[in-house]
Length: 390
Image (cartoon, rainbow, N blue to C red):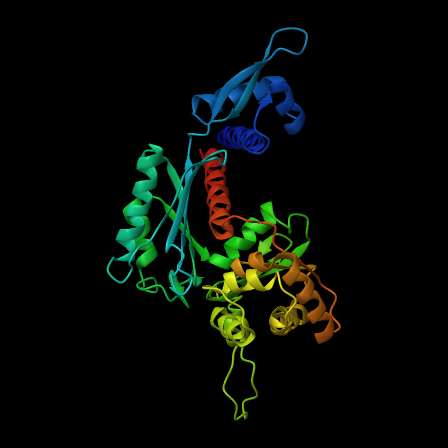
């Protein structure tokens, strides 16, 4: 009898999680819609909806009066059942961009609050600063602390999940061991961490050029740094210590060379772009501004820059053979289709490689959007898991 009861409980939980998953995706559905999507009987669907409604996960949001008979109730996930927070951390560097961009979204993905803020991490402990950022989001959105289901951090470094440490990061204090568990304990919720370029790839997969790609590589051309994200059939490859994609460190010299030791960052990172701009008489206060200005001219700047980008792309394509390579980040956004055409031509000159190359179609902050997408996915999965385990 105990075994049968357990099986019944498991089956009920599976039915409830399946129904909730459908309500989270398309949104507003009737009992009939859910019956068709889940292949469950009408009585079972009615019981499932009753339990989800009593649990506060689902609401009746209207009635369908367009059919014969009684009006059908329309159900949707309760947007206030849980929330996700995204925080994109970056070093101000030469770009002058805010050091933190943060947002809070509800269970449907609607963004309730978003802001940018400069934080002096030399003078403020990162754990204190990030807890304050989340508190400000909650206060502005009027959201209780226990409804925050997940906080997703995007960092300009790699996340070593085994040691719970951020590596290869230049933001003061963020490489300290124990930082992330300390933040999670202070917030009382789960905190996820990922490389900022990986999160940009999450956004590109969901919202951008790579939506229908079997797999893709995303080359991030930032104001100060370079990065690479690798998506294989929708799964990001992060490496043993989270360092996969730290392409800026790729050496470009022979060990016995007497020339200056170069890496890929020296070839087309932010400082290199500014130096190339000076050599070509292109004005601009930031690397992105320089590239934007050059995209409207017919000089040699973009050709030279594209040849340098092709060096990195040739290595990526030769090793990974991705279906698609997406150029992303502020530099790629600034260069747009003009830079893309120059890079395509440069890659054809450099090597007989056949991957398609495209420029991102995301005009917003891709790292923040990807962090929101990742955080929301974690919140939804946690709700479904909780139903199955209840």
